[in-house]
Image 1: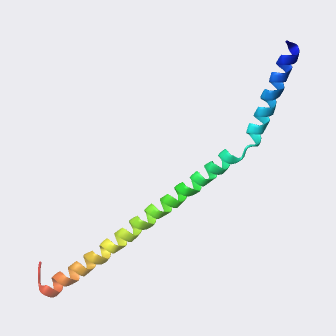
Image 2 (image 1 turned 30 degrees about the horizontal axis):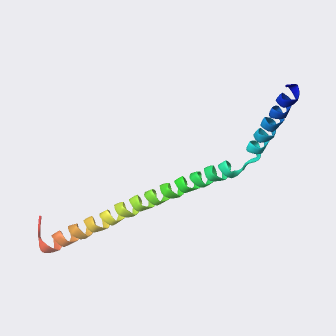
Length: 71
């Protein structure tokens, strides 16, 4: 009985050590964080570009209205 319990404890300890040394979860987490920063940068870039484009077209509209005499 004692020998079997010792064997099970040894297997459990070696499994926990192997789990602690496994780097796959850490790598997946790092990639997830990197992907979220990349997505945030894309959203901010597209938003800034859209606002700049909107201001450009508003300026063009104002200039065109002034040139045509439209209030």
